[in-house]
Image (cartoon, rainbow, N blue to C red; front, side, top):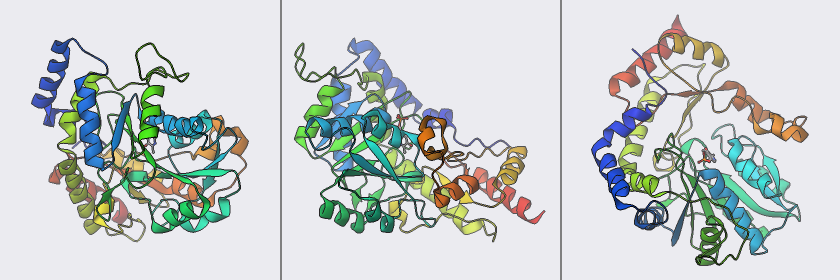
Length: 369
Ligand SMILES: *Cc1c(COP(=O)(O)O)cnc(C)c1O
């Protein structure tokens, strides 16, 4: 048997007829950028997330960069100001901060949830702190009432990195609608993935939406009139058309991910393996199914040998990366422990029950061999 970590082809095949129809429609329309597909997707996605606005852009990293840049244009923050971010996030959250000459302040996650530890945020706040970038890592909601209270108390913007959590709920409200603005990625491997790069910002702020729409289009919201020194960061019509198809099935796809996660949690029983803590089944869309174990590399090799592909999210934490040399001597023990022990099991809406059983059995054999 051969179980890939995630079969992108399998996912595309599932919606093949509708995707081909959508792509052909764009090909035949003769209109490839900032057209009807993009406008429809922005409307559909804003409605889905529950915000007044959604603005398509080129990718998830840009979405986060444009949110911070728009706040700088509005004078909410300036170069040198600080943004709090979880130390164990994917590098893109942090790149978005440094790209704007803002300063990331790394805060440790909780070892139980892998999400930012809200009891450690206040100690990281200084007079220069202007925002918290909350990352719903692995598809699990990171938002808490305490974080909201901290934002209110210190007058901080709450920016969500929702790249891994499309469709995730916090008491009936979607992640991406919990803060002031959110960045979304439609990288093919995400829960809502395009057939290439894509991203979006969601927000209730008309002002922010207007600035971001302009920045992502050369700084212009009126043809040949340039208000900002912008960039070219648009969501193209083909990707928007594909996303309009896949958005309809996002909840169904997420439900399949949850079923698989449930089976893993019920059936992987071993004292050496730490399964994810599920606080609330609505608050996790299982972009990743992370387990932790002391002999991670050995387990990964064993499973690979059986044809089960696993990945590590992520092997090297941001503060140990060469691009952030200035942080290499810092110590974040919980973050480092997660990076040493984490292993991501295959999970996707197109995995069959048989595939899931094969993974469960493979882990069982390894543990009792
Ligand atoms: C994927 C991802 C991004 C970046 O999205 P791209 O579309 O690949 O630029 C940002 N943050 C997190 C947490 C991600 O997983």
